[in-house]
Image (cartoon, rainbow, N blue to C red):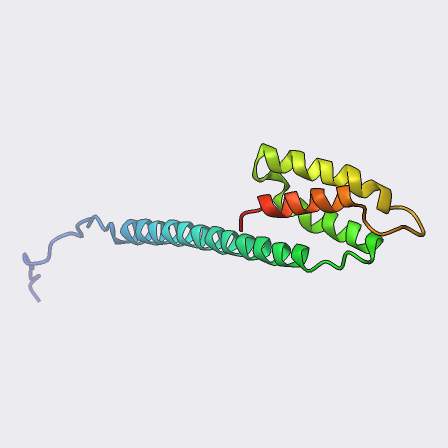
Length: 130
């Protein structure tokens, strides 16, 4: 049989395919955008909770039973610390309140709050903005 030559078949040609690179770039951009969105959502949620904690601590400060001076001194110290760093005046008022509360802590039996301590507490509560 005679040899037939087929002239229609051409050699393989290299095709430049970039779809994998496009896909990787797209996935990277989506991951970066999602991580930024998640970061801002977490930050927003923490700030939202921070203001709720401030409001809650302010309400607890107003409801403290001043007849039990020892436990009241510890509660005022704990809840008042939330507002200490609001401004320099808050820090000064909190420090004055702390020094007057030292007489009611670390002792087995204590008397009721004196007028000066109650005055410092009223000043500090009046300064707080919630």
